[in-house]
Length: 339
Image (cartoon, rainbow, N blue to C red; front, side, top):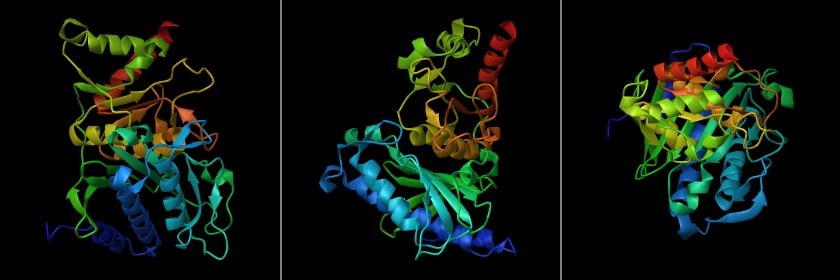
């Protein structure tokens, strides 16, 4: 792979195709990629680095934080705040936005991130990841407010994730397709290994947390029942079911071979409109999936069209192979028309 394209070269080449580009966006992407190398190191160390287990605290979501949740969040903050490319950040682990403060210079972008998605898997050595989203700061490098972050997902200028698995992989879209880069640990470089990733339109595989089945809305109940009925059911074919408990791992599998991932709305906690966070999980992953030829929906509407109402807003998520997402939407539409 000595002639492989590096992440830096790939983005620099894209920058040169834009005559008015300043280089700040390219530098920001490199900054994020470098931060994730640090997180990958800590994840790889595991028990050897004394970073496993609970931190004994809760995040703004009321979820128990792992030591690596807090450490990964700090790595992202410290790696990005001084660079001069952003005006502020927001994290799933923090209640409020994190503005860049003096003496650090400010730039024209906002970054949102889930520093360690799937952290419940850390102690059992199952794949986890970092998810990130980049928005333009509405007022350039001026001071920002919460409202500046509340942009629909369709306005994202970049989204990506880093999967910390048997190999560390960075998957990125800037609105011109999806590409995957594998970290060469010897060279310390991400190398382009998956060009122009495309998701098959049809699939025979789905991922859902079946333990919540009794709480799902009727359309999802009916949809999954029909899948489980297999060849003898209305779909006339057998489906395989998967569940990792890490959205990064689930989405990566879909990008690799197709499939459907869904975390639907349920009544287990009626106060929550969904389980996944719009700004840190649903929006960036939906952008990636759509750019790879897939689709993403709440079951009722396109996720990227949603107008955010809060920094930690939750939504139902159905994403993956385009035709199967459309099938799920048809169940919701039929349920609505029958009501």
